[in-house]
Amino acid sequence: MTARKVQRIGILTGGGDCPGLNAVIRVVTKAAINKLGIDVIGVEDGFFGLIRNRMHPLSLDDVSNIITRGGTILGTSNSADPSRFAVGKDAGGKTIYEDVTKRIVEHVHDRHIDCLICIGGDGTMTGAANLIRHGIPCIGVPKTIDNDLMHTDITFGFSTAVQTASDCLDKIHSTASSHHRVMIVELMGRNAGWITLAAGLATGADVVLIPEIPYSLDSVCETCVTRSRRGKRFTLVAVAEGARRVDGERVIGRLVPDSPDPVRLGGIANVLCNEISDRTGLETRATILGHVQRGGTPVAADRALATLFGHKAIQLVATREFNNVVVMQRGETTFVPIESVAGQQRQVPLDDPLVAAARAVGTCMGD
Image 1 (spheres, rainbow, N blue to C red):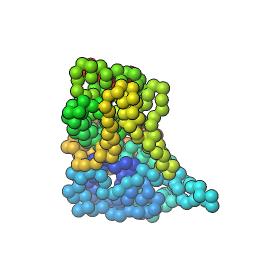
Image 2 (image 1 turned 90 degrees about the vertical axis):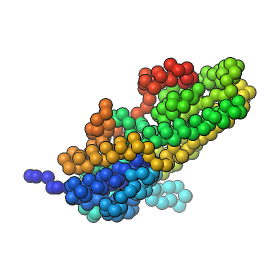
Image 3 (image 1 turned 30 degrees about the horizontal axis):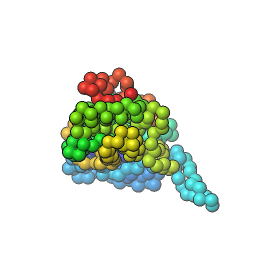
Image 4 (image 1 turned 60 degrees about the vertical axis):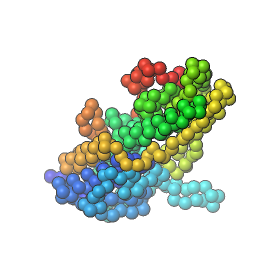
């Protein structure tokens, strides 16, 4: 029996926002309508929209002139886990959680959606894998500024985040040299150091601390003191939010119980600032870039990559190769099963060429 032609797809953006999301929405919608003649339904605020049945049709006009815009026109959420969704509180004020996946299945069927395009990182792919097990065909598109999705060499949003971080590090660089200071800049990345490593290398940071290489405070302080004694006017430290001392734990900014990933890292720069200042006597300042790394106009490389990924996703719709996620491997767009990337994070290998290059130019990696 010939499989029924796909007539309608849904598209959602899950997790944190990211430069390049609108480029994917644009190409998926245009190619679906123009090339395949199928309808596109935009899901509002990620999985939250599926749970609450908040969706609307997307037209060609809706996606016109959005490729340069940051964020996502559909909205997103990183605190809506269908398998553990907060539905209220009990008499004692304790949050009640339920698995509302069946509710999503009903909403998808009521909307006559044949396949969902899920744009996001490992958390979104975990959610998509759950929907697949409940009979909803999905296709994943990898999105994260952290560049930490398994089986893909790069994710869109990463290049823009690195450029933003590099611009900020350059500015900190100039003020550091004016004041004879140790300047610490905390960058995003969760448990992966890709942003910090790339931006630190690109800006000539003197110390680069990433989660994959636990650091020694002695080593960091020695670098700062040695540079000062040699007449260097400053030391620039790029530290990933997930970095930790050899004998310490990660610094947690806060916990979000309703989120699939409840731990929010942050604050390592302030901790390190106090430690270096107390240990060395050098004037030390900390800057936390935070969500500025997620915002702004995507750089050209991310717009092009996002468009390639979105186009590949539509090709998978056309060939009915569902339940896969688009990836980039050795310069080619291909795909792997969503299950193979769900719930995993790609960290920086200790033998990565960027690590070797950083060490070659004398960068202190904290070990």
